[in-house]
Length: 581
Ligand code: ADP
Image (cartoon, rainbow, N blue to C red; front, side, top):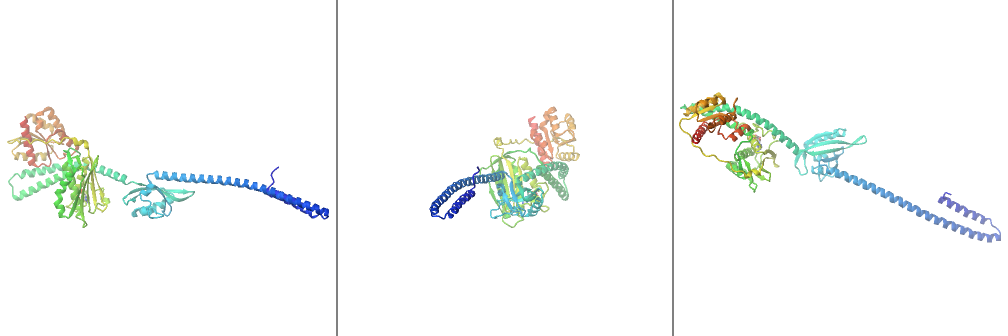
């Protein structure tokens, strides 16, 4: 039988008690009265029993119900706790994952308020400490707010957006950030936008350095070809001018010729600067004390600097770093950088300072020249190392200083770049590899002075450039030297079989037989003449020529010739060859 409900049971008990009460009410006789008393007692007993039973029963039921309720509450609480713990774990997990992403992740609403940001975003300055509800615009460079706003609007329309903007980091330093905006959809609505930001400053810098290196390498090739072409005409003009200057001349003619010679020499200096920019190896290197170079170069300019009210601070590495380098080239580089800093400082009224700093670690040596001048505008920075780029007034700048520095740094396996000083000036940094293995190398061998030949010498000139040959012939004849000229190596070999010459001056780059092939022929067929050979060249820095000169050890005269030097070399080579014969 199904158990009666509590209400039913109570109604049954009340009905029974009411029935007994009604029966009692109908009892009228004395016997009835005695019966009534008995019945009343029975009624009360029944009522008490009913109430007791009901009470006990309901007490038990209540307990059961309370236990049930307790169980229910406990189980609900457990499941609530479990789901809370699961939510917290999921949230923590998400945060750990977000923080593990090296890129900055930021979630913003339509008003550009930052709702979420991971740890790298804080590093990039996405959460300024003071603002409670930071806005994306608080961390974007003011110049970029327009584009950021526009792209954010497009992202809320549902399009993924890519952009690059200037960045201000948490430490106030500046850089470039690449941003990706991805709309976050909730059903059909876009409620937020997720922004992924990457600091691409270093990447962009090395890309631009790579592009610059590529551009300058191409320019170097072009420039070296041009310099070579210009050298010959300059050598011819210089040669004839020098020959004519040997004559008795009217003062006016002498002045004009001297000017022609000086200008041809100037062309020679320019081409040699261009070739220095385009050069690749081949110079004498030694163990060089970088601090010493810095001190000596500064000493060269110190008086001039003091007259301009420029204070120079030498902040030199106490370890006195040494590198395997060409000392004169390093000095030239430092001098160019110092002169540029001086000229930049002349344009400012504020305190004029130059700091020359050297630093070294196990692998690299760093040289820095920082000034408090006007600095270099960002749009010029990619051009300043180009040959002939100058922003200085005409007559002041040639645009060659930095391109030569670039060539020297690259030639030493290093690099040069410019940074901005916090106070607005420029800081040129040169990084040169230490190459400690080289420190054990022996110092460069110095050559013994040779006996110079006197009297009438016979010289053979091998050069395909007719006018240059002519200039040489005329000058040497005027200096009482018997001289003959031929256009190439084959003719020279033929002539050498017929006649004896004290010295052979041969061009390196010639059509037909090159200088290298001519040397090889002499080594094979006429080894007795190898010591009588002198190379003439206008591009001693190009890799092939530099290697040839270095390997062969053949004395060299540079075009355009200084004829006095040329004659000295000719007499020395003749004297040495005769002495060793
Ligand atoms: P030049 O000095 O003959 O102009 P450079 O190649 O040495 O040629 O320099 C190229 C340009 O770089 C200069 O014209 C100048 O505008 C800029 N520059 C170089 N050094 C500095 C510096 N320290 N401060 C500001 N501008 C500089």
